[in-house]
Every structure is written in structure tokens, then in C-alpha cells.
Length: 585
Image (cartoon, rainbow, N blue to C red; front, top):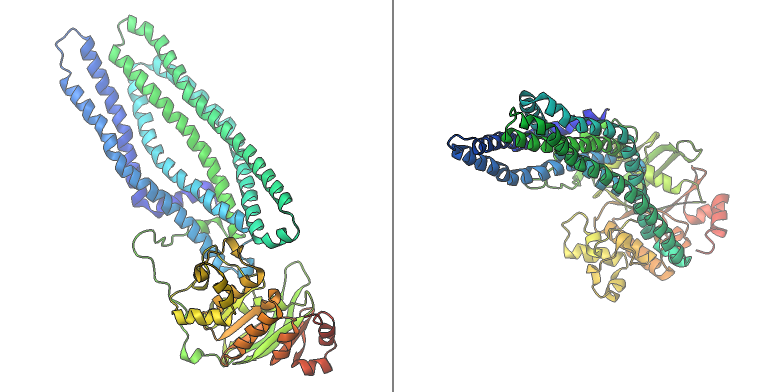
């Protein structure tokens, strides 16, 4: 879809606001036209030998001069409203599209790059919406001023337009450079934000490798590169603005040179000369900002292109689909998924579940098993056997290609929509925490009672850690939980999961960063909850021994299932895992 079509759709999203803003600017730019005429009348009266009759003209000029300042408060109200509506529409449509995709495939960009695009490129589009409204007022002034000037003196008008024509031609030549500099600036900004995200994500790995100095040096290099590119773009932009602004002096000088002879001949009055000077300067300002608007339009295309990366092949029209932005009034109530009585968990049946990664001979094939209420089932297997993939496909985080899943015998059509709290909860291998307090991370979907919070903390074995923290549960953990250890991150994520009181709990190697004592306590406390059903990925002996059923995967295929004693006697792959990879666990 063309840039102009996308922009036009944004204009139509809030037509009342946009048309009101245009009306304000039309009135604002009509005032200089009237003011110029009144100024001409005033000075012609002053210069004439006839009795002065300029009181009414002066009074009208004063009234006209007050109109624009009177409209400013309304413009200052409408401009941010238009800007924020455009940003909110684009952001919400992007998020809505991402939420329709399988979670593990939704975001093809790094989190830092995604934030950069959502922040900077949506802002660029919002600013253009404001600039485009001013465009109509400038067009009104340009047309009105040219008509008045041409009716008075064609020669002086044409001389005034010569520099303006040069500006338009030069601007068209420089547009390619503007677009190239904007691409480079946005790319370096994304690199810096991505680096920041990676540093916070890998803080422990950086410390273990004592790579702090190297990481800081790399970060400084990226910032130096970004500074260089941003400075080059800014200097180029300022040179363009300066050139266009300084052309005002050239226009004024040309008008004086050409007008001198005409004034001397008596065919041009002093008031008319002043009108030409005032109109020419304002025309120059209008045309110079005209060039900037064209430059911003080119930048607008870059911004739409960068936001289109979120859509992963979907049409760009998805960006501007009309949706409620909820910028005003009460926010909509978040209604949690209700646990229906007939949906209370008894068993989950998985039949012939399959998924293959694109361009790779990896995935899972025809996996079938059953989970019964109150049991612990452990998925185990070697590296790359499909353990995590199985969990993700089961939860709808990856799109199943074959197979069915039944909840209490009822077919689940949309796994991603159904297998959420209160039906199920999931903690991935690398949990994501937010840079707030521990309490805020636990209570993502309020309300919870204090008793529920305390129970979640107890079952996650977090109580000793909170007692050791100065602010306890109100401790701010920093980006991605950087102030916590690996084990604390996993247990905070587990507590967040336990707070939902879901029927089915799914863990992906939850205890990998826990010491043996803490791990034993955690699983013991979970076992005390007779109504809880768990499906966990693990190779830890302590969990394999507790499991009611073990699912053994190899090359994406379920090759055996049973208790650990049965599998030790009958399954060579499990024997290898038990005596090899699991021997030290």
C-alpha cells in the first residue's frame, strides 16, 4: 500500500479532530492576508496628502492581529490529540496483530529494536499528521497572496518567485539524501537499544565471563557510531533549513531592487511595496516549510516500512484498521477467562500432535499421551529431542500442524486461547520478569487476596529470600530481574504461576538453577496440593523419581512412557539418560 493511502486512512480515523485543526490553521493563515491589505491601506493613507482616514484600518489590523493568538490554545489542544490518536492506533493494531500469531513466532525483531520502532516511528507519523494540517493553511495563504500580488505587479511577483522555484528544485534533489540519512539513523538507534536489551538479558553471563570491559567498549562503539550518523543527519537537516531561511533576505533584496524604479515612477505606492515585502517573506517561509513537509513525507515512508516489519507479510493496511484507542474516558474492564463448572479439569488427552520447524528437519511427530488430575508427568529426553517444542505446541505457542487436544473429552479448537489461566499456566525455561517490584510481578492480573499471595510465595520457596531483602516483596528487581539470582528469577516466575490457582501447571526445566535442597522443598510443597496437575520438562533425577508418568522423547518422537522403574528396565534411551546425562543431577 502506498504511503499516501496509509496517510489518508489515518486522516479519516479521527476526521472531526483533523478537520477542526485544519479550520484553525485556515483562519490563522487567512489573517496575514487581511493584515497585509490593512497595512497597505494604512501606509497609503499616511503617505497621501489627503486627510487621514486610517482609524478604521488600524482598528481592523489590531483585531486581525488578535485572532491568531486567540486560536493558539485550541490548536495546542487539538495537535497533541491528533498526534496521540495516530500513535495509539498504530501501536494497538501492531499489538493486536502480534497477539494473533503463535507467541514464539510473533516477534521477529529483538525487544530493543521493537521498542525503538514503536517509540520513534509512530512518533514520526504522529508529527507528520500535525504538519500536514498546517499545510492547508499555508496553501490558502500562498494562493491568496499570489493572486493579490499578480493583480498589483506581475514583474515584481515573478522576481519574488525565482528563489522559491530554486528551493523547490533543490529540495527535490536532496530528498534521496534525507531518506538515506533517516534509514541509517533509525538502524543505528535500533542497534543501541538491542545491545541494551542483550546486556540486561545476559547480565549473569557477562559477569561469569568477566566481560564487563569488553561489553562497555562495544556499547561505546555503537553509541559513537549512532552519534556520528545522527550528527550527520542533523547537520544536513539544519543546512537545508538554514538555506531556506536565508533565502528570505535574497527575496527581500530582489524586491527592493526591482521596486525602486517602479516606486520612483509613481506607479507603486509605499503601502503596496510593504505589502510585497511582507507577503514575499511569508511566502518564502511557507515554501521553505513546504520543502520540510516533503522531506517529512519521505521519512514517513521509512517509518511505515519499519513498522511493517511487525506484520511479517500481512498487508500494511493492518496498521491503520479502525479500532477503539481508549485514550479518553474509562478504560475497558479486563475480564479474566472464567472457569466453568463443566470445564473443571479431569483429564487432558493429546492425540498425534505434530509440528515441524520451517526449513529444518526438527520438531515433534505424532505425540500422544494423557494427563490425569492430580498427577505429575515429566517429559525427558536428550538435547534437541523436542521437549520444549512439545510444550509450546500444546499451549498454542507454536502452530500445531496435526493432532487434536481434548479437555475432559471436549475438543479444544484454539489452544492458545483456552490453555490460559485459570485452565493452565506456564513457566518457560527462561522466565521474563518486569522491572518493577516482586509484588507487581506476581500480581499481573489482579485482584488477589493477601492469603493467595502468601500461598504462592510459600509454594515457590521464596519466603527466606524475601526476609533477606530490605524491602521484602516490594523490592524492585530491575530490568528482566537483573537484581535477582537465576534461582530467584525462576522462583518468582513460579510464584506468579501459582498465584493463578490454575488446574494445569506446565514447567520447562523450572529447577535448573535451584540447589538440591530448594528443589526438593519446592516439589514437596507442590505434591501437598492433591488437586494440582503438573506437566514438566526435566532431566533431574529428583523429579523423575517423583513422576507418576515419564514421557521419553527422541528425535521428536515419543518412544516410551511409564514410571522411572519401568523405563529403567525397558527403555534403552531412558537408561542412557539416567546413567549419563541425568547421573549428576
